[in-house]
Length: 439
Image (cartoon, rainbow, N blue to C red):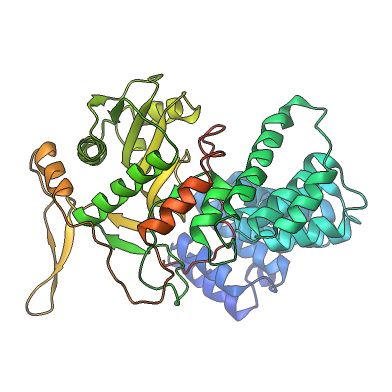
């Protein structure tokens, strides 16, 4: 039981989170907990988390936080709290507790693996590498050395990844074989990409290919020096931007010497518009999507839009396993919350996007902000506007690297031997190239 005095945290930062809970603002409390950092007393953090979890109806996290608030020095209690935080999607709260659990348990591999999982969820792959390397003398090949290779790649350290990969034995347990195969493909893609790409911490196209097998068509011409590194934050897309992405897709197919027989139209409106435009650009017939169709280009505007459409989740599942000659192209892909499957070709990476025919913001003559309604014209009419647009690249602010057609074609040609292999498993990490995020 807790005394009345112990029911409120003492830390000023945590009291701000407590105040959010007083007003019923659980998301605000969680944001304050993140802002408070990882040096707050765990027993006091647990008080806030217990109350937030109870408000959200998360009984497992409520119980784990209650136990931690009462006894913050037991390794098992620290581990249970960290585990529950990961399960409930607040891995940043798990990290301090799991670090302490690892310390108090004399390097428990169970605690180590959960800590690595939390670091991965937060994109902190370098720290995962550091923890795994510290315990190399006691860990196992599967999963620990595998996790070291995995995180070394996502941290941008190919030298370490290759060295550890060479030490990795084949898994005795068959459940690890798909992971082994994926890791082999990652390093094979890296060998192809580095022949024409720097693979430094600003090489977005190169690393997108290494970690996901995706060829990125275009780079944002804005904010490279401000930390975007080729990704978009919020974007109101244009017909010209869509056409530019489709022309890059055509160049990619030519470099790979692929000759598809059709464009497959997905059922959501955004994808149908772009698919009709793609059929014109690629000079191919357009047909409704059918699972198992070979030698076709499946075109999505944004895979998240497909997933939200009636029947979309089923189609997403059908696209997970690759069909011979099938290419999945998504014009726009969210990099902060990647879709359930990974496209083979992506036009651009964004945090938030509005299609050219969607409801759009506009600035009035008096400086006021309004919204224009979505374009409800027939799909074919809008698609024709896309194919008639000017695909010239926006010159941007001049800070980014060159992204001309010649450079793209060289990259596409260099990676053709390792492209379109394996399944389309989701890649949750943004990889080693950092970008600014916006709330």
